[in-house]
Length: 268
Image 1 (tube, helix red, strand yellow):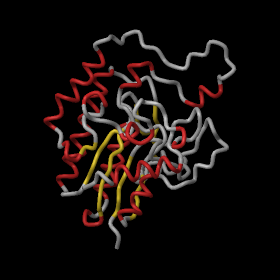
Image 2 (cartoon, rainbow, N blue to C red; image 1 turned 135 degrees about the vertical axis):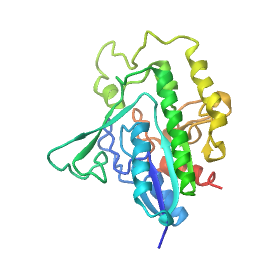
Image 3 (tube, rainbow, N blue to C red; image 1 turned 120 degrees about the vertical axis):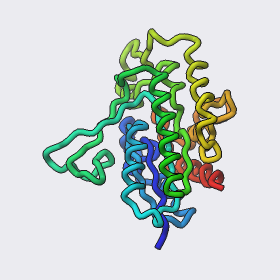
Image 4 (spheres, one colour; image 1 turned 30 degrees about the horizontal axis):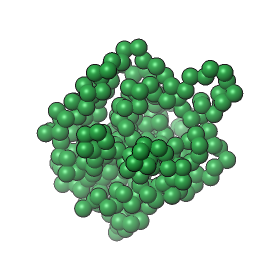
């Protein structure tokens, strides 16, 4: 029997991902978890969901790990998302269709995601994510499970710069005069970037960075995200040959192959 590769993440991981801004693009290609599982000769349990935040990622990994016989688990991977996203579940009277956001173990529960509007501020959201890092580490070590975690995309940098509106919003407003492509935040100061970085540096002593690919997840401080190393050139420009379209920066088939290869090379 093959061991199981258990993965959770956001849209960069979702096996059912479809582009809203480029609906004519066929996105049925294998995603990086399935490609990686093939390299590892494992069965893939891909829990990724479009729009997911870090509470969803941690919660789905927790449920899957605790309900799976531990001798069947070969590797656990957490592909963390942006810290400002909010995840919660609601009860639905009718059993939802089998889609990425349905609760695998409670069929009348549905995951909901909010990109913006979460209570708290950027510093709390970062601390909450750091606690998820530590909690996942402790969970895997409790059961003596091989694991790796990493930021698939930047945790907070986009928020501080003025979060870009979705590719779908941008494409729908290409002909709209004076359309603002970014959200703006009046309460962000020049010191906020370093205050955010300092939280990651403070928690570094509490995290097993040997099992965290690219810690701290910031290029300026010796770390990186997976997106940084696979879908961008060194100057920070997008690699157009590895993304869905001009407006949709999600990985295409070749992009997912690049991500799978990058992670595979860092599992030792």
